[in-house]
Image 1 (cartoon, rainbow, N blue to C red):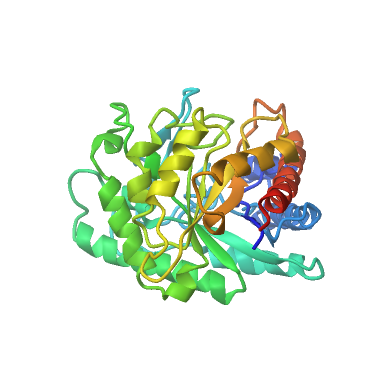
Image 2 (cartoon, rainbow, N blue to C red):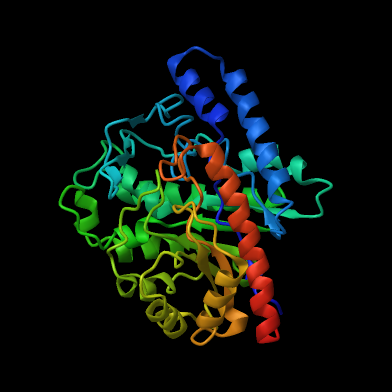
Length: 383
């Protein structure tokens, strides 16, 4: 079987959409006008991706405030924040360029999603009609939303145990809703996995030894699905990718990979193109990936393009990485992906690219190079 490829999810929002988000936050346009801009960008994302050869299309998460906050807030500026959340929560991450992203804080229970990924998917699914391609989507991991609950202390009248029960239920509902709406694959964004071992004194949760808690929490969701269903549920990990910067690239993969593959998902989308010692990580993947994860053979989609770098990899570059990886990872457990979503947050000027519109063009070129390179590697490997 040829080496499979899959996009992570997000694409840079075009400049007109980022302006619409800002104008909506400023109160100078209506929600209907914002939705119109989102619809235009989502349709363009699907149509353009269909020309790259990508197997499963994405709407680029154009309607999401971010990969992490779509269930709880409409815009990064604070519009639509759920009533039982306050804006003064923990930092999710502090990035290498100095900027940060902050999560809200839960103030009361019960916890419920305000918006589900499947609701956005349903709006975009018609755009794929006539393209000859199916669609995938991404959801946020419960481990990320776990950080909404205060790191220390409690929420009055709402224990952490009750919160976790509600959180697991909501995440399961989100994934099942995506499949019911027609998504062929659903990947779970788990960028907090590597960050959990950073021990950044400016961001206390990263030193709280939460990785095992995160894995256990994500498995509570995964274990509600059958092996057949979990074959099409993936986990994405990366060291961040916002404003062309990262948050945990210095954390060695050896701190994450054994725990990553302990999650009972069917496949993994793993940042690797921008890794300094790729061969070492390939080897670790080969040593930790499971052929039987509660009835599912796991597949590692390795990152072969870097969304933070405007240089477009050639198909030959991609094929070379996949051929190197095949020395350590069985070809029936090997796939190709991008290191990260191309813009996980709705407001991202893509400074190394010069503009989000140019970055959007580059993203399509990178996706095509990945698809073409995987095809080349498959031919050379005879699979």
